[in-house]
Length: 390
Ligand SMILES: *Cc1c(COP(=O)(O)O)cnc(C)c1O
Image 1 (spheres, rainbow, N blue to C red):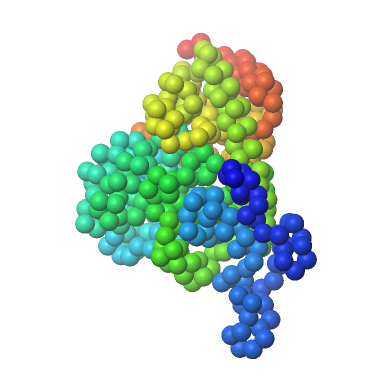
Image 2: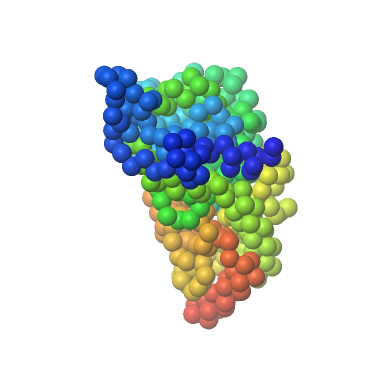
C-alpha cells in the first residue's frame, strides 16, 4: 500500500461505536474498576485516547517508534532540551527559528547548557566544534526564512560517530517531503501549528523518536513537565494529517510557479526557493526532499524596510501575519516580525535583510497569487518613488 492509503487507514475506527472520526475524549480522568485497574488510561496528562491516535499516526508518518503531542512547537523543543543536563553542549544551526534561539540562549544557558551556532549547510562546520560535552545537534532543514538546506545524512554520520543525538526540526518540509529518521536522525520535532494542522487554527507541537528508549524518555518528560496537547486540538491536528500529502503537493506546485515569477522581477534581488536550480542547496534538497515546500522568500535590490513594508501591506490575498503552512497565503517581514528578537548583526549574517519578505504560499490559484504580488509591487513602487529615485 502507498503511504497516503496507509496513513488514512491507520487512524483507528472507534471500537465502541464504529465512529469513523476519532472521538474527542474531552475528559480529565477515567473511572477505574479497582485501584490501578483501568482500560489503559487513568489521567489525561499522562495519556488520552484522542491524543494517542495523533501520536501513533505521526510516529508512523515519520517512520519513528513513538510520537508525542505538545501544547506548542516550542513545548516540543523544550521537551527535547530537557534530555540534557548542566554542562552539556548543543550545536545548533545558525539560521535557527527565533523562538528556539530565545529558548536555548535565554532560558537554557542560565541552567548551564551552552549553545554553539554554526552554518550547518557545510557539515564540516559541525564536525569542527564537536567536543566531549556535545550531546545534541539541532538542525532545521529547510531553515526559516532563507530556506538553507543541511545534508541530514552527513550530519547524522557525525552525530553517530561521536555518540551525539541529532534532532531535526522538520516543520518546513513536513513528513510528506522529508523523513529525517530515515536519513539517520534520532529525533524529529514539528511545530504542528504549521503544515500538519494546515488551517491556521491551532498551536501544537510534536516529537517523534527513532527508538523506543528515547521515546520513553520523552514520554517521561511530557508527563513530568505537563505541556500536553488537549483532546480537541489533537483531533484537529489529526484531521490535518488526513489531507497533508494533498496539501503539500499543491503548496509546492504553487510556490514553484511564484518563485519562477519572482526571479524575473526587476525590483527583486534574491529569490530563495529550494526548487530553483539557482538555490545554493538545490542538489541536496533534490536528494533528501520529495517536494520543495510552500515557502518562498525574496529581498529587494534596494534594501529598504519602507519599500518592503509597502509591498506586504498592499497585497490583498497574501495576508500580513506571522506563521505559515495554512491553506490561505500569508506574507511577513521577518526583520520586524518573526526575527525581531534576533540581534541585527546575527540576523544580517544569515541573510535576513531589512527588505526580506517571506511568503507562505497557500492553496489559492497560483495565477491569482502572482497577480496579487504584481499589483502590490506596483503600488509599493509608486508609494516609495523617492526612495527608488535615490
Ligand atoms: C513556528 C515554528 C516553531 C515553533 O512552534 P510553535 O508552534 O509556534 O510553538 C518551531 N520551529 C519552526 C521551524 C517553526 O516555524
